[in-house]
Image (cartoon, rainbow, N blue to C red):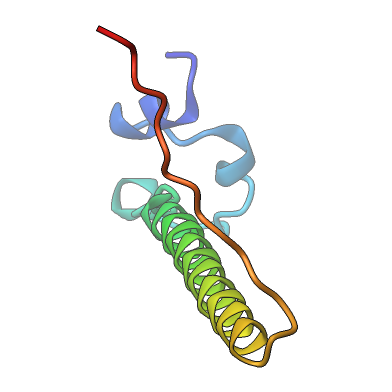
Length: 95
């Protein structure tokens, strides 16, 4: 029995707890309550929600920037301040 949990399961009272029991107490009727182990589910879920939210916000920002840039190019090209040409000419191989 190396761990305090093993001592408590076997019915032994560790010395540090035994000193805290008031004199005259029947140690056979003493119930030792242990603190529940910490759950990591909450912090893990919170981290995943924050990561997903960050990705969603970045995608929305990228979409908005794309729409604003397309609108700016459309306005500038309509007013004559900017023009662009897409050249789709391909070179034909002689047969």
